[in-house]
Length: 325
Image (cartoon, rainbow, N blue to C red; front, side, top):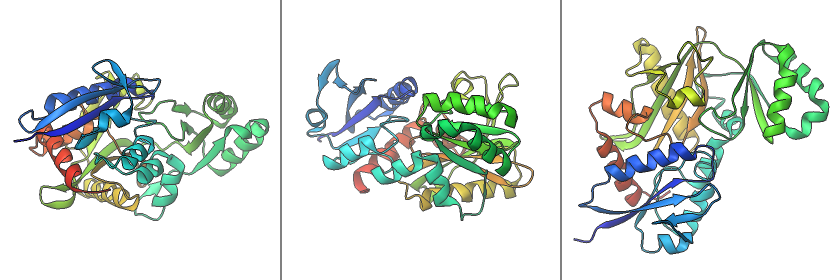
C-alpha cells in the first residue's frame, strides 16, 4: 500500500521559532509510519526551507506531497503567509485558511469581529508608530477612556511576546513609547483582573461538528505578574484541567470558544484565551495554531477527556486530507 506523504513544517522566521521546533518534533514522533511517509521541513529564521540540511525551494519540497502539517507558530505560520503559498500550490494543510489566519492573528480586527458575541471585551485602543509625535495626547485619551491599569501588546504576535503590564496612567507614556519603538502597531487594553483560562475546540471530533475541550485554568507562579512568554514554557505555571470553575462558567467558556472559532471562519482547531473576572467572562485572543507538544494546553485537554496525542495528530492529518479550506 502506498503511504501518504506528509510534510511537517516547523521553525520559521518568528520569535516563536524554538517552540515551533518542539511542536514539529512532537508531531513527527507521533506520526504513524505504517500509514504516512513524513518529511521534516525546517524553515530557518531567515526564511529558507531545509530538508536534510539542504536548501530547497518550497515548490521542490512539496511536489508529490499529499498533505502538510503546519507546526509553525506566530509570524509567517499563523498570519496567513504560508497558507497563501500552500493554496497557490494546491496542497492540503492542517489548520485554518489564509484569510481566517490573518484575521485571527490581528488582535484588534479579531475583537471587532467578535464584539457582538456573548462575552465581554476589555476596552482597548489600537496605536501605531505614527502616533509617536502625539504620544502624550494619545495616552491622555487612553487614560480618559479606560484604566487605571493597562496591557500593551504587539497587535500581531503570539505567546505573550512583547506584552507589558502598565500599573498606572503615569507610566503609560514611557512604556507605550518603548513598545512603539519596537513594533509598528500595538494594542493597549484595560487590564482585567481575574483567573486565566483557555479552551480548545476541534472540528469533526467524537461525532461532533465542533467539539469543545474542557477549559484549562492557568495559574502563573507568584513570581510572575501574568502568563508571560517565560512562564508559558518553563514549567513554572500550574495548568489545571478540568478547570476549577463552576459548571455554568465552564459551559460559558466552551460556548464562547466555539462561537469565536465559527465567527472568524477558522478551520480544524483553535484555542481561545479568557479572563474569568468577577463581573464577566472576558475574551483575550485566539490561537489558530496552538502549541502541540505533548505538554501543551490542547494535548493536556485531550488527555483529560481520555484521548491521546497520537490520535489527535492522526485526526488533524486525516481531516486535512479530506476537508478543503
